[in-house]
Length: 415
Image (cartoon, rainbow, N blue to C red; front, side):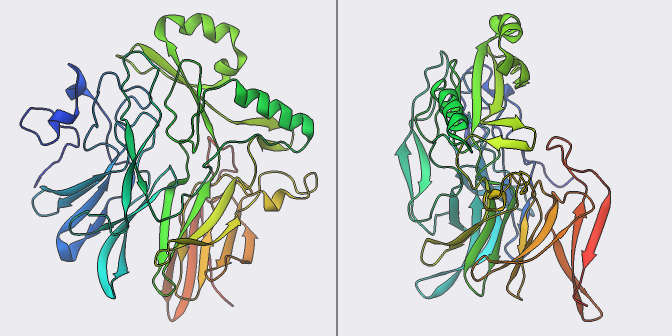
């Protein structure tokens, strides 16, 4: 063992200790890296994407900004010493983990190429940082966000926002349904919960998280085409519903509220509150019917030099096109990343419909699609053998998404 690094300061001599307040703060768990660590061997740096602290939705036992949780942390690979950090969420109570690996790329600034690291977040925010210092290469500003009403909680008054890059994913809330009656039901459900825009904190009433904890940009991560300067990623657009329940009320509420009974339960041991998490959709005979407007999943390209959205196209479908003729324009929830190739193609699976697809890097137009033997919730890769290029993907399905399971590794090449 050469070194080990704990993202949570445990003693007063640890850097960042003053950002964790409360007698139990030093006992907090998580803030771990459950995604992939990126490495720059030439600069002797590794880049750690850390998660939200435990528990995800209540921070009363860990008040303060909570460094180095929900951060990108650059560590000297040979020594384990922290070189710099950039916190994407202060005092995270939204489960807004940095779920994807940091992306290392060249960034042109003032006519010079600068080593950069790009961070895509569940909030749909993209941060471009100098790889050696962590200083933002594109401006970031702290903006005021809603305040928590939960006893014992103190949310941070501001959060960092990219100033010049577009935010991806569901950024505002409105009701939707395929019929007026469905839309009315969606509106009634929305009206029952608390919502003040992005970073609406958890509440006892129940709060709508927009974007939700599955993104925005999710653990599939981003890819970059140096020829066009496009940063490309797949995106989810689904709101989450987060409700805190006083622990002593849990048993009675569970028996009387059908929606709470179906929701995921987090016990949040050691805190006064249990959390219930559900999502703003309803089940139909044809599958998941979202209650916010489509598209629900997209593939998007951002031009880093102009700071604009170059294109965004629906990715896959969730409903039977025979019953919903517009389903292919509505997109699909997706888990799994995309890759971009020098040949001007973006390859991605990830969707609930079980297809593997290729899109044009230039304009996002669909070029090719083929069904997989099981759903491909993984990032594809490409390689070359004897002068021929292959694209390969692991197709294993996803139990929680209820997609087709299998144990396939499928490769394709041109004839």
